[in-house]
Length: 67
Image (spheres, one colour):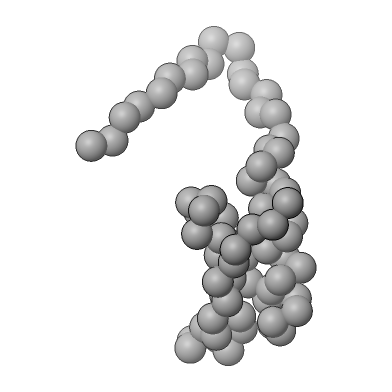
């Protein structure tokens, strides 16, 4: 599966910032371009296949809509 990612240097740290526009909030970074690309691969995998969340007894799940 292929995903488009955007890389850019962070002017404050000098590291490489990277994000996947098709997956909102899926971002990462690395000291080098190569490290950033490896890190975004892991971020995409976690985004697509998140670990299950164990809720405490009595917890309620709801969905909200933002306008």
